[in-house]
Amino acid sequence: MHLLFKSPKVDADKPRRLNPSRVREHQANERTYLAWMRTAIALMGFGVVIVRLRTFQTPLLPGPGNGWKLGLVFSLVGLMTVLLSAGHYFAVRRDIEEDTYEPADRWVILLSLAVILLGTGVIYFAFAAPLSPMSPVVPD
Image (cartoon, rainbow, N blue to C red; front, side):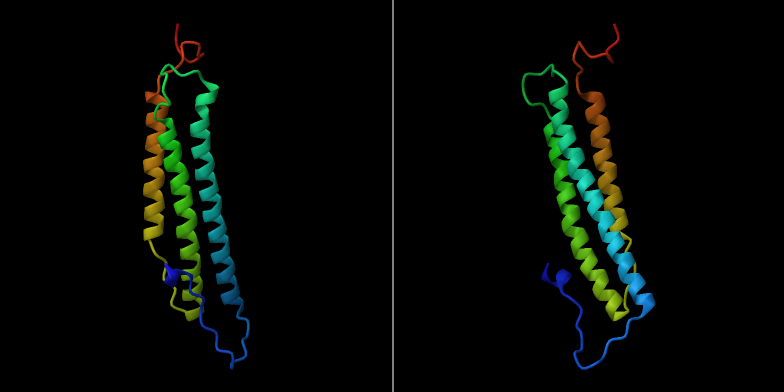
């Protein structure tokens, strides 16, 4: 994990000139990082919402049910997104400085699979959870 957060080496003897293209690349990297942070916050927030939905609807089951597990998974995936995006940001930053950057498909695939799995869990939870008899959704 230490290698992910290693900053690029800077030679103190050479004067550094700003390359507008490189500056744009770093700014794009920062925007991508911020997008990952928004995604992580949304995932964690959605996890909290799923857990708290139980307080708005009287459950038919006396126990806590399984919704909290789905909310916990959302929150954990959000936290993992924070960790992975921070490591990815510093790795891309180093690659930009070394002029060796190649986009990786694994991050797109990993996040897409995580969202597909979480979405499947939400759909299952929404349609498998028993509704209260007082719910306006239950037909007469």
